[in-house]
Length: 298
Image 1 (tube, rainbow, N blue to C red):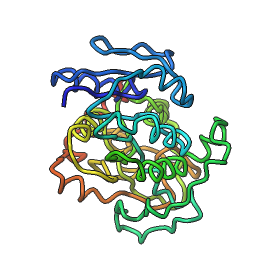
Image 2: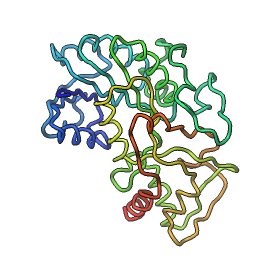
Image 3: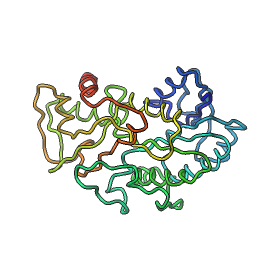
């Protein structure tokens, strides 16, 4: 593999992916709207990926060994990509999310049995309903339908003329600047101020991965040959275990309510396919203490 296009995602863990590809001698092209500079050593193209004509114009006659799509959130975006990259790429990798399994995000999904990790085939992409007519260009709607948008985007790309893989990453955690969602900082800030953590009556574990680990998985997926979805996570734990790691020897206090990682429903992921494909990730014992310490020190 010599040429890879990265759509968006040149910050946060996307930056690590690009660094790893460049270190491997890959020629990397980045396309985004121009609001963020592309990393040094890459070719930078400017286009709004929602504008099919502009995207075609920016790409010109270029073709790629693989495309890594970091910012495909809707079936409309996937529909454009399926047309634009037909004949331009030998492989397409979409960054997806654990949120595709959230049973509250779709009337089509039923809660999985408690304690049974959710496997990729839970969602049948071949039959999943796609509605291009929804107001996907409305940011508020897109945010509220995040999980559904990702499911429908995967379903559209599953019918593309080129090989497609999707990486459904667990909740991405990292300390300091790596905490791009601010969710881990929420807990660290409350613990530093000795404020109680809000949790529902019953909490469930979920699947997590660090920012460095998901970069490693995406870099591997770009150069692999599997197709279809794969769940990517390295650990399962709940909000109590997370807060214990953050607090150290201090006992956290809790109160009734909701908070970012206090899940009141079960949808942790089965990662056996990831392991079977040869990608091994360390469990939480190997990385959670360091991530927790960095978050508390931020």
